[in-house]
Image 1 (cartoon, rainbow, N blue to C red):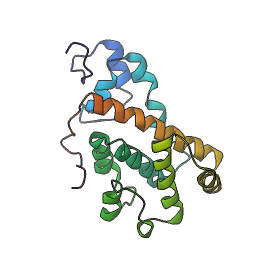
Image 2: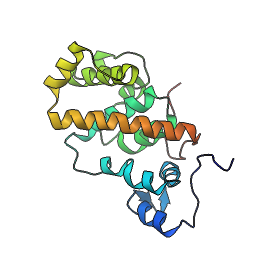
Image 3: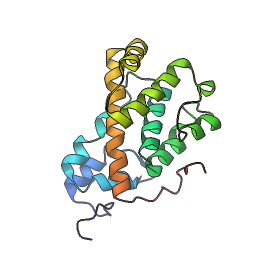
Length: 181
């Protein structure tokens, strides 16, 4: 298994340690996902960090919805669980909304009209790679151009994150949530 994607362990080479220093850590603990990215310095530097900043044109709640629905659609319990544990409360997601992230379809009673439409758009992007004319019209009405690009970038990035976590078969972090049964 010399070519298997697995999280790197310390001590890291200097260039990897310098790149990992730009990722969030809790009491020195760097998430397994980020340590898996570290198998490639290029990937570590370019793949995700640009979307981890605080300058997003989207409110935290919308970012969380995009990330959670994308990772749920990609069946990535690892990343879904990390985001639930870290961001669900701050994003003011209710327990029924968290559980609904894994449901097929959209329960419009749980979401604002804009959020329900966004969830449907994410489902369409994940399933078809695009949006129908009607969905595109709504998407363009709901979001500025900058927000549209951010939503698309987040959806694409978290497809990649899900692929990495799933292929590396990362077990959930100890603090992470699990998919609802």
